[in-house]
Length: 239
Image (tube, rainbow, N blue to C red; front, side, top):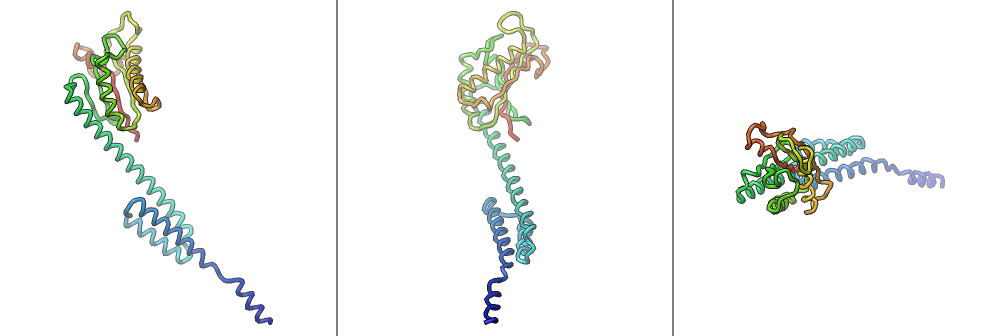
């Protein structure tokens, strides 16, 4: 009877320490499958690191290594996603720029609208003559169709839009506005309101009036002053 009780007592204390490395191994395999599923392929060096961790897990040494490996996998996935999103945005903006260039060419608007890829985004410059009467901030009737056409293209992307008003250095005398600051701001705001009415969310829009402070050319000729009077519409990059 005594031997039997001893035998039963030993049965109640079965060594289950093998479950720890086994659970670590399952966790590591799960991390591996996540990486393979997310990227479709895996770097050889990264795979080798994972295999080392798996080997350590089998030897009962893998808990801390698995935690580090999982952190590395998460960071790698986040970086990969960020780079992919940046590349997708770049391709969309380049495609948009090509479509706008085609529109400008087809409509014969090269003398009044220009487009340029700048570090902060794709910038459209529209001379004031196509948008406003002299000294006015009210959009002209024929400008609405052009802005609407451009907006149909711009709506393909969800990037923020910056609208800037610019004037030449000729002082304003009389009329509705007291200065070029006010005129440039009012013109930018008119374009902003038009975009908002056409469905661009207000939190994606911003405007600035620069007056005569940012000329493209010296204000020394009629042609240069006309070029300086403009509204710049920039589809901003988000990176």
